[in-house]
Length: 603
Image (cartoon, rainbow, N blue to C red):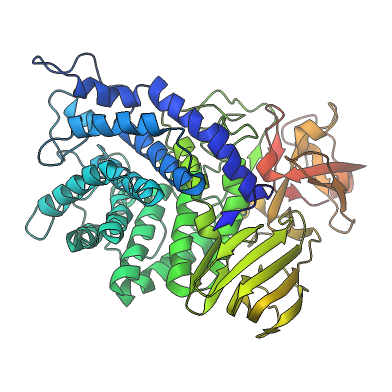
């Protein structure tokens, strides 16, 4: 599978390789994350010199960066980081203990014992990212050194926490899906069983309560009973991905049933229109159903990435288009917004509204993207996702080829290959040229009412239905042209989302739009705008790659009140006519800090 470098997704991969991965490499060195390994490897008789640097889970930033490199080597064949890989493999081999344990925080901090405080030490979380890095490097280049280190870690987990071992789980789920991936790569059954035990043991309140209680860790109910998305959003979504991975390997239908209910909770009652997850800053968690304040959205970048990863697994488990739909929503909106046009600055949280006068000095809610964070989980997470992005676009089986993400590229299957030409998501014309024989399945977005299809050398079974897959029985050389209506539309939220009642979001195709202060005159603030829902929306093509399609909206500008609270007088609720520009939400804050909002009040 290969994405066209001129497509939106393909250009992100190129930017990731040229800028984001090198930026991550530089920063895991600059912040001491790699030095933590070097410090232990070079320790003398008196122990390591100096102190551990960074958060206690800093190892994971190194491992995610290594995973990004592994996928990029497999994608492009680059040897740019060959020296780094050799040096880091040497460090891991030297630091890893004979029993397989490897964690620079615990090993490098006096008084710390392995797995003594699983609520917060993230040892299995870090181990999981090591396993995934090793799998990526092995698949990408055949590297055996990292895989050998990972297998020793896997053997330790399977032995220490296996059938006869301690019932230890990690406060931050992640190792579950990593153990399944290690099983897939090696065929060692004990890794799969270790993943099963991690899942089965969660939900029995074995972790210390900490500041936020058992729900924070998803340790409040067994996974088959915990059907409401709750607690720390990234942890919830990583756990769900791991549980779905288990179903894909062991076929336990009760696991899939629980995940379908959980998915309905997360995506049906707690997801932002941009594909963001997590509405509370205090514990980075899900709120109540329909608690989705745009200005207080936490919507951590890692949560959107984890949501995409879970949807991918649900798509593989069920074949249902709705999961690919949500992959696309998150990818083109919440995830795309989290990185700037240089590939070297990032949002940790992704609000849907930034107020005029916002104090953006805090890392938790900055006014513009930052080059790195004290908790730097998001940048290398983005790097590993983008490096592997082509793997999410399509699948194949004996029947043919399935296209899940509409993007230009070349996709090969067992019986069918396809070249896709399209300017999507900016244009709605998707042309697929097929080689081989079999069934081509192309996802028709749920919003694409009025989509049409034209084919040559193929038979459509049946026609395009929004929210389903268009299935075409193809002969060699067949072409399929799917035409999607790209007319901008207004979207409203369920009435139970109190925070945006009386507001609409403007959406074109899969792209959510916003209004940014940078497009308004100095004497007009974002907060004064109201949208006229009856007025037409005009498209404007821009000569740049950041906002290629802008929208011109009409409405009114309300004057400011003289006091904070004013007597209600419906006759005074009028404003001056105004037109204003909306840009893709994923492009906001590329022109400096300033107010922004996705949800617009109606005039």
